[in-house]
Image (tube, rainbow, N blue to C red; front, side, top):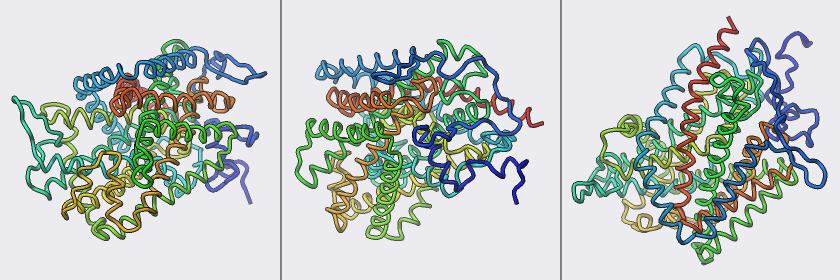
Length: 573
């Protein structure tokens, strides 16, 4: 028998209820009209009362071309991004030095700021986990999880996978190992090497340990704390406070009803900028690696033309997805990709160092724990190339991706306590990343230590394929690697267009398809323009330049989260 007075008994989003789980992710009423993408808070919560209605500032049209856009956010974001894209295409040869100079200036002068901010995010997450505020439940005290624990962990695992792990899984550990082994190089009183900290000149084991610690530092607690802050903020103010699922809502405790005016517009515009250029950076990396793989396997020219054609083709596939709304197809494609990634990981473990991977996993975690504070220190260091060129760029890149990944994590985490949420978001994807880096990076280093220099000599985007060439079934595994990069590309573009469209439509999660097509197209064009204008330098420069102002936004969000959680605690007393 059921008890109709029990709020948990008939909750439509009970874990394992497929009729509700998929609509939560899709957020599109045309597929399931009865679905409520953002359910009301359940139980005693401090719902924020406001006269603002979602979409009241929107410009809508439903005849020849259907659209529903937030006028200031969409217009300013779209015009600025289009202008940057056109300028990059028209003046591509002249802009290369500009992008390189902008990247170097931002990372050189603001590295301390990025490192300090990332430390704040980690400390806040840890503080919330151990504090009574960790007992607050996202969605209200009577809310139950929309997904089972296994499904939730699987989606957090999926969030931890992507083009970045494919691109840097071999190249980053190898780069840090090589530079650490070479040791510090001083010219005219200034270090010119790229070794982390003080390196490990001539000591292979120490260089391996430091190289893996530095790699895990860039894929461990700090980046996932960045995502956790954004996801927690969005979940709290949407599921508990009843506000739209957009970044401006997070600042209601600070700005009040002014979030519906220009202060809120600016916050959302910065979120759009950060997301579009963060995505373009990842898509550019993916295009470079897929092109390198095609050249490696099939001798297809690794040229700009190949990269442009690849981006156009993949963007077209993503566009078909956003037009037809076939989330089930994309979902199956993503699940297939996760299976392929797991099989590739398992293959490298078996044919590579075998069980040594598992002992190295714990050794690498120990090295990471020992080097965490020195690597996190923003002041008094002389490893400027590593700190500026690697860490500062990474933190800016992670921050620019945070609205995208944060919104996904928020939407699948309703019903979890803040403590459960933070522990899972910090640990599950980070552990996956550590295992991936240990397997691929550790195997590459072992092959290099055995006397093969090809991996060290290869370009960043080619290192994965050169490493796989030293293992059995090279053609098959390299082809799987290319497929993984391409499908991650497609799913990132599709999902990214949904997130950007939600922000630029004032928080609406069911906006018309033409808007998603527009943003999907823009993502591809931005990636093409930046690749042609300055390659990796341009991609990195735009990620850093948009990541900087959004870092300021996230620091404000930290204060808003604490205020919002304290109000929830008061409501429960």
